[in-house]
Length: 184
Image (cartoon, rainbow, N blue to C red; front, side):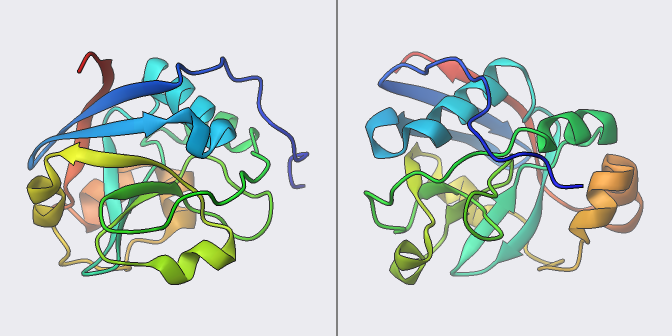
């Protein structure tokens, strides 16, 4: 049964904040602008504050397109967060290289999965993909994220089995060690 659509009870994020992703390939700093997509920014803020993105794998890497992440390595944690389905934000920014956007499976289906645009993907703008942040340092590290597995890891298996599945079958995936709100 699909969860009800609605904005999760997320705390309001600051109008602008910075998130440092300490990754297996080096640090990445993202500037989040709440005005670009407030529902997405608030949910990301909550996820970072609660440690949701710690020890999370970059499970889908399509060169010159996107690097995707945001399925928690613990299936119970992921199941809880999957119940918090977000309403769409209007698209106010373009999906250009370095922007951070929630993945979606159609209208009002965002949960925890995100991607960083590796290329100029403005064709996504008309499909409802609403950027809410951008990489301000460490894009060279994003470019280093291992792409050898492409789109092979199965998202349903990641949700059911967590990092155990990824570690066994895709041991060279890069990952976020820790995500934290930082001063800039």
